[in-house]
Amino acid sequence: MIVEAGPSNAVSFSDETSPDTRNTKQRHVSIHAQVRREFELTWYYELIKPFEKDRRDELKSIEVLPVFISLTPAKRGRLWETLKDVQINITDSLPYQERTKRMANDAFKRDNAIDFIRQRAIANDPFAKQMLELLNNQTAESLLLDAPSRNLTSLAWFAREYPVGGYGLGRYLYDDASNVRTPPEHKIPLSQFKSRTPGAIVRTVTQWTSQSAGVFSEAIDKVSFDGFRPPPMFDPVQLALRRSHGFDEGHKNLVNLTEEERKSVARRLSEGQWHRYEYYDDVFPFETLHSNLDSRKSFYVQAADIAAGIAKLLYEHGGIFTVASNFEYVMFNGKRITQSDAYDIVDEWRRAGYLNLDGPNIPRKS
Image (cartoon, rainbow, N blue to C red; front, side):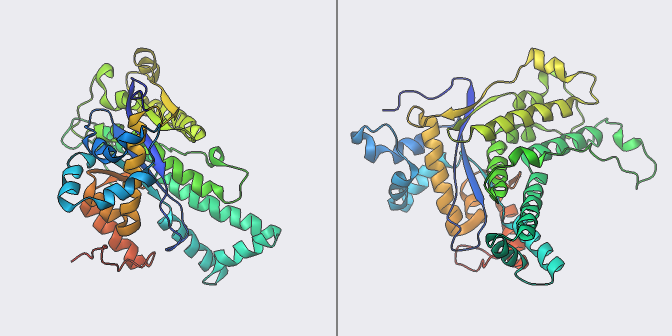
């Protein structure tokens, strides 16, 4: 029996799943469902009703999904009235892998360069092993360039330097329009994601960028371009970064990396301000990122697991468009997207030839 909600200071709870991509193209996809404490869980209690007599400690999404699929359209519509509030954070490595593939094809003057290199690496060719590692690193670094933490740093910098209608001075510092101020460098070291398993770095970075979106998305939403700079104790971006979040057990190392990254971002955001990072750290310390929550003891984590399973089902059948059409808050490859944005992504992937997107569930732009 589930006996508790989870850590009382956690404002959200996340769990991860990965869709089956074997029938499309081999790539890494990570889907995190983020259940926020302030939203109703009516959808969750409706879905677990058939299992109440079992009195089991844990329900997994694979058991609950048949119940969701069997619902009548009317019942499913009522379910979505609250299910839509779950935040979905997705990272799909496909466009990054395809760009690396095309780069390799151009360099080696052949259409199947990466497949050839991979086969040579399996045959223990030392040059092919080194080349394959470099290509994997290229894909992972491209993923990190779109990490939510980097997007937050860049967005907050531009809001401060070039506020729309505000009183910021950055846009008046230069007469030469070509001499535009740019954000300071924000590099996420690739060495943090190294593992002993060859090729695992792309999978690890994919998981991390999806997971960390749950910590940085609220701060991204708090960035304002109105030109007003709040006093330190009321800075919504810094306060959002310091809130507590919970994650299902199994990826403690990735949560630790997120902890380091959010402190680094908080320090970057205070640079150039009249108040220092240490002020926030003393007055508003960082609340815990809980990394090993047991879904058998937290109904919030269990709800996140089930919601992730539903998002996975939608992604497998209709891609990002179907997910964005049903959930109201979707982060995709580091950025929050709307249904219209999903149209553009699907259209871009179709034109680029990344996937065969002509199925009945994949719309075309008019």
